[in-house]
Amino acid sequence: MHQRESAERWAWLAAQGDALRRTLRRRLGADEAEDVASEAILRAGRSAVSVPPGARRAAWLHRIARNVAIDRWRQERRLVPLEIAAHVTAEPNMSAARIDVEVALKRLRPSDRRLLALVAAGTRYSEIARSEGVDVSAIRQRVARARARALAALREEP
Image (tube, rainbow, N blue to C red; front, side):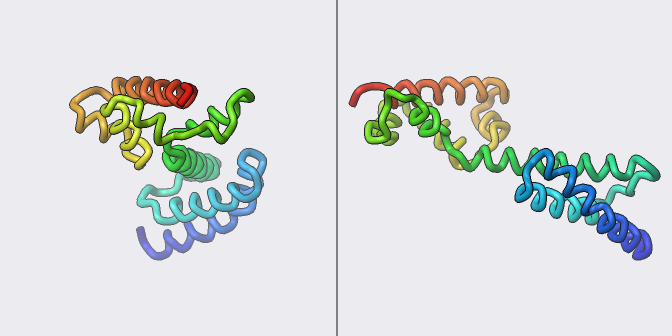
């Protein structure tokens, strides 16, 4: 990309910033919209792909913003290791004092503990599948079953 094209791209992106933020605020809320819009503009500015002409330019930028929002959502999902505490404490008959995750995890099979630890560490399902020599759908099933067993172990009496 030439300097002139780059300067034009950045000028156009700067002009689109406010409109993009307004659209994202309606969908994501003010704080999240600001972050997503900024990251989308940076990605679009650094992209090696040429900017589409005409009306498709705005759609191109909104698609990048959508992808940024999805990436952020996936990252946040990986940061919440098992989401067990949220499920358990949401139940009215269980008190927070009864929840002992370590004891519950010790009740699980070693393969379940290892799999849940990998997921909690942020390892992608595709990476786990490759190391296990199975399909990604099999890993999804195993993780779902391991989480269900962990939740059941949390519900058991000590």
